[in-house]
Every structure is written in structure tokens, then in C-alpha cells.
Image (tube, rainbow, N blue to C red; front, side, top):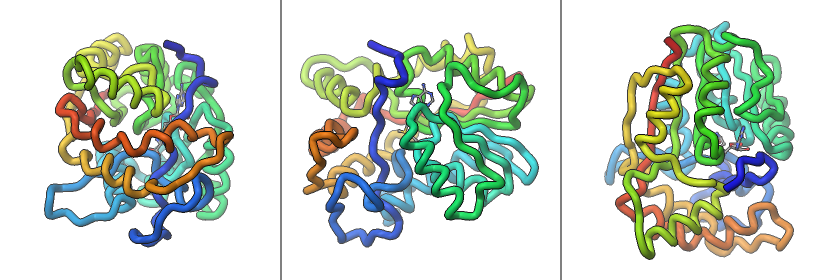
Amino acid sequence: MTDDPSAHHTLPSSPDTGRRRDEPAETADGAAVDGNIHVGYWDGAADDRSLDQATDRLTDLVAERLGAAPGRRLLDVGCGTGRPALRIARATGARVSGISVSDEDIALARTRADAAGLAGHVDFRYADARALPFGTASFDGAWAIESMMHIADRTAALTEIARTLRPGSPLVVTDVLLRSPVTGEAAELVRRTCRAFGSPALPEPAELRTALGRAGLEVVEFGDIGEHVRPTYQAFADAFDGVAPSADDPHHEFFGFTRSLPRFGALPQIGYVFLVARRP
Ligand SMILES: C[S@@+](CC[C@H](N)C(=O)[O-])C[C@H]1O[C@@H](n2cnc3c(N)ncnc32)[C@H](O)[C@@H]1O
């Protein structure tokens, strides 16, 4: 297992809101996959949100826990291509700093911020969560949507995030969760999925709680919203059906794997953590 940031590759994003639901994603790059890089949240079977609407919904649930307001400073750990940061900055008036270990992410996120006219409110830079380029107690809140799963030393990352938070400020973490150990074929499927996601190992509940405690963070809320996000895996497989990436596409492995995602997502051991912690 490696924790070298250069070894990380991440999921491509969900289809862009501009694309009609019935329009197939034709290429592995460009606008068709340029959006949120996280699961969607549905209330239940009767909730007919599209994948895009549901992924924005997850961002909104995170925003609700941040107590964001104009003038506040927030940190987005593992910002992807910036859509969550821009959405939260626009909705709340807060200033957001986003970091990622992908130059490609940062370039796209900056382009998005310019296009949205939010460059004065949001900044994106290349940085590792385990060595943040920010002073102690710089932020009034932070979030990490599906970035902890990419980091082997989660205690180191959480300790560093905690350092940058002002006392009393919240950290919201959401991530794919391994609820309980898997064996046999299920273990092999989880192992292959981790490889495709670029995850050294999926977070587990006890391990996350221990890491938060070691980082000096208090758990305020620790939920498993796995059943609300489960439709994502089939939706991703449908959205990327027929996508033919070139061999040098950095997400080549992920695209080759999307057909297996529904089987992974159906494993009862796969959940999704939504937690709020606080720096005392
Ligand atoms: C699945 S994407 C999620 C992106 C974004 N949070 C979203 O929801 O759209 C994972 C992100 O974590 C970032 N990441 C992975 N390891 C990291 C590390 N050690 N430090 C900072 N960011 C990291 C990746 O570069 C990527 O931007």
C-alpha cells in the first residue's frame, strides 16, 4: 500500500448537468464527465432526482453542517474539479480554499471558478492533505468529500486538517465505508474496486473513529447513509456504458471497471459514512 500522492488516481466525475439523461456519454474526457466526483443522495425509492441532482444534494447536506456564512473561511480537502467548493461558496458567501494532489483537478477548478465569476471567493491549489499550506486556526470549517479513501495515513491527514481549524469549527467527512470485513469473492471485488478507485483501503468505522480521536477531533455526528447513496453505482455504470477511453486516459482503469460497480454497490458490507467532527 502506498501513500504517495502521485500514485493516486481518482474517479472521473459524474455526468455534467448540461447533458440530457438519455444522451450517452461518448468520450472519456471533456464536458460529459466534468462535474461532481462523488456519490448522489436520494431520499428513497420515490425520489426521482437525476444522478447530477443527487450529487449536488450530497454537497448541500455537507454545506448544512458547516455553518457557512459570508466572511467565513472554509477548506475543501480533495476538491476534485471544484464543483462542490463553487456550489458552497455561491450558496453561502463563504470564502473557500480547495486543495488536491492532482494538477489536472486544480487547473479545471480554476477554470470553473473564473467561468462562474467566483475567482475572488474561491482559490484552488495543489497540496497534500497531510501537509497543508495554511496556518494554524485559519479556517471556520472544513470538508472532505471522498478524499479520505485515497489516503492511507488518515490520522496524519485528519491531524493536519484539525490544526488548520479554529477551535469549535466543524469538519465534515463523507466517504465510501467498509461496514464490516469481507471474505471470498466479495473481498476480491472490494480489492478490485479499491484499485479502480485509487484507494489503498476503504475506511472502516472503528478505524475512522480512532483516527479522529488521535487527531484531537470530537465526533459530533457519525452516520451511515449507505442506503441513500446506493443507486449511484448503477447510475454510474449506466452513465459510462459504452465509454471507450484511450489507453493513455488516466481513468482508463476506472472506465474498464464501471460495469462491475453495481455488484460492488450491492454488497451489504458497503456503506457510506457521513460524519461531523469538531475541533474542541
Ligand atoms: C473522489 S475525488 C472527490 C473530489 C471532490 N471532493 C468532489 O466531491 O467532487 C478525490 C479527491 O481527493 C484528492 N486527493 C487524494 N489524495 C489526496 C491527498 N493526499 N491530499 C489532498 N487531496 C487528495 C484527489 O486528488 C481528488 O481531488
